[in-house]
Image (cartoon, rainbow, N blue to C red; front, side, top):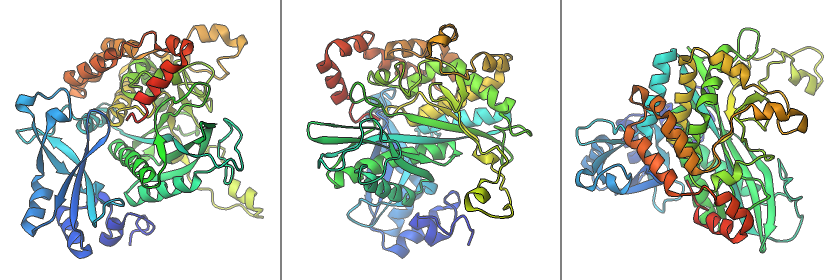
Length: 502
């Protein structure tokens, strides 16, 4: 067996002995027959950024073959606002590579994510998944390289306060039990996500923790490994679905909301990216320094940062998180290892030192592994309200745009900071930087201003851009931050309204 399959926790992968991208309809049929599967579920994202489900009872071989190979009809107007009721039928077809054994179904069930197709049998150009596909295709056509991504999924777990081993407020980063109360829940989530095909890097408790009204609010994070952008989006969608379902089964509550109270850490959805050519990571040059390829991609994100919020920060509470002096960005700049910047270049194992030998006291050095694949850059503005497929598509567009700008390297140089930008001595530098939007209305205006870049190569359809702008403007939230400061009940109402966003 391929060594990459030996420890794979997806039961379908283990039984078939294949990588998921090699699955066929016949493979799925064979698994269903051999494992006594009774039902099949189709899942697909809608405009509210949640997965929807269609259930099938398997009652004959011909029916099973039919749903797997020809899909089923759904009412598109009930899923997306840009589809008119008079012409609303869409097809949903399962993507076999996403198949997993459903951990929550009462009967043995195989679940798969689906793609949308229009009446003529063409991929629905305005669907979130197809938009991401087009964004990645355009990136490759322009650059000759592959765009990959991974997400850092932050969320709060809310549980009863047992008043023992009280954690230090806002000091929960990597805390262990018994001071961290929900680590076991997080690891159960991670196990189920892995069984559903998620490629997880690690999980840990995060900074945010506090108690209120007899409840513990404890922030957690699950971070993924870099994969192709569509797979990254699929994994994040399934992970959110699993975390919420497991919480419901265990009598807990979870929220991916960007901000749930003032003065406490908000939750982001940081996205790491890397660019590959023929399997080689192009983020570093031959001297193990950040490459011009990476700098061009960063420059594109610097230019489109104001409008990327239209896809990554999609409700008013998003902008309660994007305020100064928090570990969330407000200034459009980038830097190394600096968590106050918009785009961060994290440590990349480029020292050339055999740290394992030093840690273990070896007399002779071990073989130093090639660690260049680990280098990424991280966009820190998005949060859990994001339309994940559209967000990754927007980031692919931004990185592509960096290769289309003649002055990309100049922009990268001008927006680089290597200091804490909020220190008084750096006031002049801070004043030279552009700022992220302060509310949904401003975000809509930025998307309107930059929409042609997103629509180039027919990546984002005009209907999708129009819909995003209309949704953001409908909040009419220009003065919400001021009102929230003056009226705490106003913020509480907003938090309640958007508690289960995304």
